[in-house]
Image (cartoon, rainbow, N blue to C red; front, side):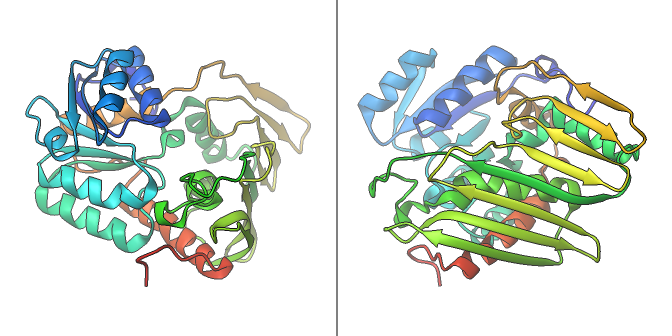
Length: 335
């Protein structure tokens, strides 16, 4: 079976959405349109917000608060779409109710919280996955095929950036330490997960960063070392829109990935021998592939996905924990 089969061929599954923000809205729209799944319930702490969300997306059931949502018998799986600071608590709540869980990235604030979530999932025998939707997209599958076939030789360097320009607002989740804000967990997680997807776990992590007035990271540059020859050069910022592209350089060629590299996009392969070709991916932004992955794995009785396994999420968090240590970002409640 293809690494990225048509999402519409995945078994049906009934989703409950925990949280009613912008990313939850995108999930509801694209999953309903692109898969055989149904979004049957949404939960929010605010009744009006829950009802407006349900009306906008044709969701039949609303819950005020999250416990009623996770205990709703018509729900098979929960999509956690709350701020990073609440991911662990809400994932554990859903697992405790016996539900399968898809948790927005970054999966949790740190690796300790993630280990607690995975331990609970292991005990309950439920499926849990980080919603790193990039790993399930067609252009990423094609990139792996090109690299695995040796078309660019041994990978020596991966470069990726992700920056967006946000006006400073101390109450925004992006700038609030209590909501685990900062560029790294919201934007930089894409670049770290990207590098680890292609190169694996680094041997060394170096980071430089500047903090916002609220003490979260506003901008970070990261260098990951792999053995004696390979590196990843990654950057993220809240202060400017960057190209959001990637380059994967090997001993026999170069792949340039169009922006935004983490969304469905195209790339060009240029070999040292002069041959070149282009992979075209004219496809709208969608969460359907990752939602279909959940449905397929749940139907198989699996507890994790081989494309975004628990250890893969833990590896990303270990890197980000080390980056935050080096740049001096500590969230309330962390030791």
